[in-house]
Amino acid sequence: MPKVAGKVAVVTGAGAGIGRATAALFAHHGAMVVVTDVDEEGGRATVGRITEAGGQASFSAHDVASEEQWERVLAEAEERFGGIDVLVNNAGIYVIAALADTTLEQWNRLFSINVTGVFLGAKHVAPYLAERGGGSIINLSSVAGLQGTPGHTLYGASKGAVRTMTKDLAAELAGQNIRVNSIHPTYVRTAMADYGAAVAGMTLDELGKRMSPLGRLAEPEDVANVIVFLAGEDSNYLTAAEFLVDGGGTSVLSL
Ligand SMILES: NC(=O)c1ccc[n+]([C@@H]2O[C@H](COP(=O)([O-])OP(=O)(O)OC[C@H]3O[C@@H](n4cnc5c(N)ncnc54)[C@H](O)[C@@H]3O)[C@@H](O)[C@H]2O)c1
Image 1: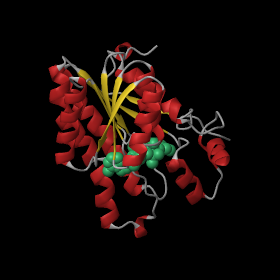
Image 2: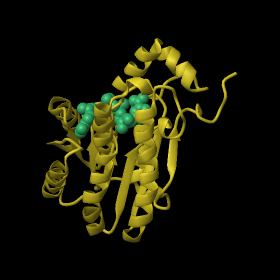
Image 3: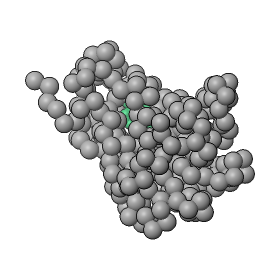
Image 4: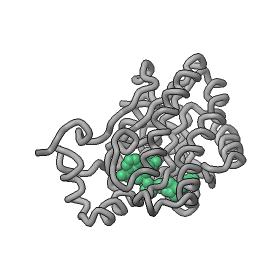
């Protein structure tokens, strides 16, 4: 069982998908969860599910691209639960576009969420984690942060930035006993996989067979399990590392 009972975890973008599954798993294992999202309805629904199941959670409206909002959200977390031990930088958006069709506006907007959001989160949470004697930051990158794919110059660059930033943060924050790791999922059964499958002209089942020798997409819970492990004490010696949650697809050729 992951050792996260009594810890306070802030999970961004937890109004849907991987963030929602992660928030639910933290609460299931006895952590207190701050659910943040720009989607207030989705975020409140996540909190509702957790509290109905007997867990502890609160919601903060949050655009991760806004520094002011980070300051408010983290202050709210401390006020509500007495401190912060874990940050999951999960919020992100996905754009697939040919290079010639990718606009500077799309580039700046996606980077403001997928990259600037992670930087701001790490910068502002670090003093809270240090105050507790250390903590864990888990950043959602992607297999797209490791491999090139047509139509992925923008998204892939953002996830590559998250991969390297994770190692820089780990190096800088290790002295405060703050561990920082990145997660690299393949397609996970969320709105993002629906979009990817639609662009590829495939069903979700076909996409799952294409992406992994296991023959299926990842489920949000497959990713949540690794995130919660990285937040708990069983992963105390893991930092600056990258965790593929890809069903082997990045390493195995399907012939
Ligand atoms: N689903 C996949 O196939 C997949 C694969 C690899 C990596 N990822 C990464 O995992 C993370 C979660 O993806 P998901 O599939 O659960 O996505 P999702 O679209 O299901 O959920 C993302 C959540 O983030 C929120 N969000 C969007 N912009 C935000 C902002 N500016 N501030 C705060 N919240 C915001 C959305 O409202 C939504 O609730 C992302 O970083 C994504 O890039 C997903």
